[in-house]
Image (cartoon, rainbow, N blue to C red; front, side, top):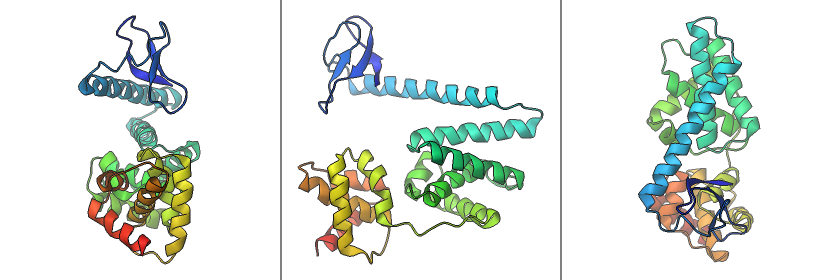
Length: 252
């Protein structure tokens, strides 16, 4: 995988070293950890620059694929470009990307965008598709990605599922484990341990993402990977106090 930034010695591209060492290697001169001397701001600037370039490529890709005949078609292209931005930021797979695009197109054909927040409807499609396909993303995380309030996102989600007749299954905590485990930087074993922990409390109450985060918090300790309550809470979009209460419940 190419790492943002260039080698300070030769200007070559950086790649991840094999294994879980978090080391970087220059493809040109072989220098190990050439980014070690970079400041956090420099590294973040490089990451943000790469993401901006990827976003522009996504938008230009849709514009090249869809024949635009009028302003309405142009709006649809922009909506689909936003879908791909959410796919990238929320780490959706190809199936989810296709389903989100289908919901956006169906909403556009049913004129649901007329008189409503376009950004909120697209974000609502992303949230609905994730739950429908069993790869849910926490409402808080989706709303933060879309830069809008949870209540605004939730209203749009309710509108489109009602208008389009989309049936959303009940989301269990297990459904969040894969996504949250990745956000928390935990190994696959932690996900397996968390799944076993959740079996002890099948009659869960409250936020399922928060319960999944608590299970991963405990699983991380089992695997020797310490995660703070704050880190677990940020990953799931809940307060650290919520994670703590769920941890105590699972322990009991």
